[in-house]
Image 1 (spheres, rainbow, N blue to C red):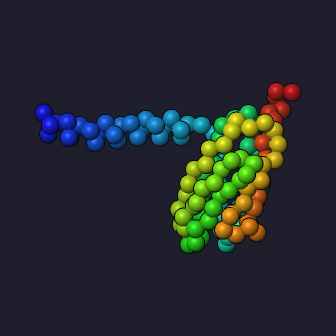
Image 2: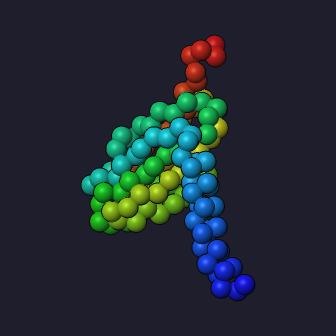
Image 3: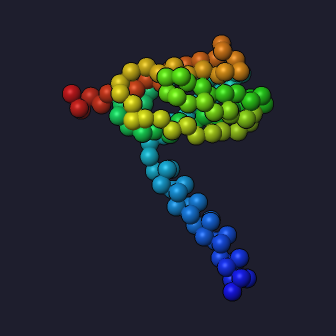
Length: 118
């Protein structure tokens, strides 16, 4: 019995990870790149009142940090890797973000209202 349970637990863990990962992957997403210690693009437009995944990919070898007081987010992006940052739903507006390791690198998330909702 113990052997079967030991074999079953990893399979259950993998199945749970697939289900949780697929639930998040279905929503809207956009990308942000860190290259030469700068955010590209410096302005990210997202739909207002929508939860969105921002995939931050660091193409530099040095770690960077995606930080935003406006969005209440702070996450280190190791060199040559990527992280996901979930924001929203946000009212229409501009939300500043920056690299806390290099304050010269900054940008904006702009939450844009849906023109159909007017």
